[in-house]
Length: 269
Image (cartoon, rainbow, N blue to C red; front, side):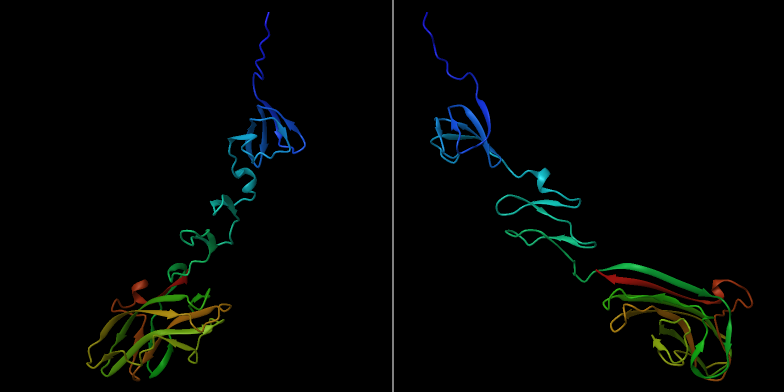
């Protein structure tokens, strides 16, 4: 009976390619993450030689070994998949455009976000009968903020209920600021100051005015290591009696009979 040589019934896996191993047809090896099958017996001929080898499957980047740390991001550069390690807290992923790799960076588009809020309300009526640029009408209350940078903005809004009962009277309200202390006095920094009599009363009829003002303070020149305290203050044009923190509701109680100061601290992104 004749004998028929069928050759190899199936390919034989030989593991990683070895330059000193003699390979025969249908041997399979791996190299550089790809697999190759021998098409002509030889030894010492690298898998890059199309005379002896045919690529079966092309390998790629092993994602499991490329991404090694929590926060890693996978991206493709000019040659293949690469790892971008985590940035620092607060950074954003930035693109360099077509043909460039992504990177971590700080957004400096000039936008702002709310960083903090503070307010106080004071409801005790105060009468002043002497002319002056500064009258303490806050009762020891103050709002405070600490800049995160000199680009920050502080938005103040404030209100006061006032009464002028005599002719030739005038008054104003504004803000006073002091660095690292809430003990604010006449020698500290005036904010939104508009003089002794922003509101003037010429007649003898009692004049009740609810004063509402707003003001934006740029933190240029302020210290990021300091806390700044701000209170509402009053000013008067004459020696006639002028009431702050008071309305024509008489001796009642409640926020309508006082003043408040609020601030919103905007941090530049």
